Image 1 (cartoon, helix red, strand yellow):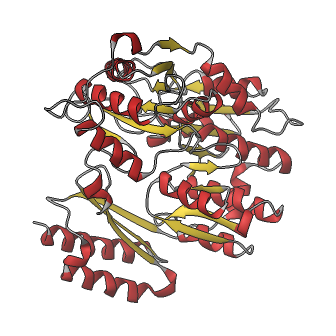
Image 2 (image 1 turned 90 degrees about the vertical axis):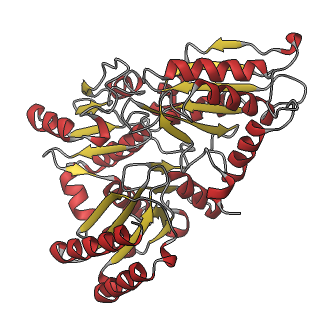
Length: 460
C-alpha cells in the first residue's frame, strides 16, 4: 500500500486545505481530536494533548473543535495560543505531554489552514500513525453502528487549561542556543515575523541577547499572515536591511519553522547557503557526525560540492522536512534542511526552527568577526537552478508517461555530471514541479520548459 493510498487526509505536512471547506472544517477537526485522544491515551491518567496555532482567523474555529473532540474523548488539553511550530514541539516534550497539535498552514495565505501533529518526543508523526488516525476517524474504538466515533462518559470528560507562560519558556530555550559567552550587543538585526506565530517571541529573543532589533510583520490581524512579508516575500526585509544598515535580516514564515536571511548588503541567503555555511564550520570543528548533511533532492548542487570540497557529503531525501528528520534520526546526524529554509539541528530541536538557524548563523558571524556576505561567498558557489511549477489535470506516475521519460533521460545525458533533473508532483497541490540545475541558465530553462510541456500534454 502506497503512502497516498494509506493516507487520504494527511499530506507531506499534515492535513491542509481552505478553511471551512473539507477537510479544513470544524467537523473534521472534531473527529480528529477524538481520534488523537484515543490514539495517545495514557494508562493511569487522562492523556495530555498540547494545542497551539499561528495567527490565522480560522485558527479559533479549528482550535475550539479540536479541543472539544479531545476532551469529549477523555483527554486533557493544554492550550498555548499563537506559538511557532517548533515552540509547540518543544512545549510538547518539555511538559511531558502525550502529543502536540499545531494549527497552521505555514507559508500559505490566510485563507488556508492545516493541522499537523507531534508525538510525545516532539517529532512529527510517521506516515503509518497518520494513517491509523485516519482509520480511527472513519471507524474505530468507541464507534457506533454508523461508524461514528463518539465521546466518553460524562464523568470521564477531559479538562482544558491555558499555558500562559509557554512563550516565555520557548524564549528561554531559544536563548540557550546562542553561546553563553557571547552577546549581540551593538548588532542591528531586522526581524520579519510574517505577521505570524513568532510575532512576540522572535524579536524578544534577539533583544534579550543584546541586539538592536527592527521588527516588522508583527501586527497580525488574522488575515495578513504571509501577506507580502516574511520568508515567502523577503524583499521587504532585505530593503529594510539596506535602509537601516543592519548586519543581518531574518525573515520567518507564518509558523516560523523556516527562514530566509539577508546579508548586510540586502542580498538574499536561502536554506542551502545556510547549510553550506554551518556545515563547513561543523566539518572544520569535527562536530558533524559522519561528516554528513541531509537535504532534499531540491537542494542546489553547489551545496553538495561545498561539502565535498571539505571532506563532507550530502545525503538527499524526498521533499519535506519530515523526511529529512527521519533520515537524520536513522543516521545519527545533526544538521539537515531544505533550500526553502527549513533548517534542522537535532542537537537543539526536533523540527525546523527559523530562529534557531538565525542564532547559529549569528554565532558564526560573532566568532569570526566577518560580515555574512563574505562568509556565504566563501562557503558556497551556487549552480544556476530553474524551477517550474504548473497545474496538472491529474497525477499519473511519471514512469507511465514514456515521452516524458524519454525527454528527461535526454536532458540528463546532455547535462552529465554538471547538472541534475528533478521532476515530481506537489504533495499538497494539483501541480507538477520540474527542477533543473546546470552551468548555463538559458539552456536549462529551455530544457525545463520542454519537460513541462511534455508533462502537460501527457496528462491532458
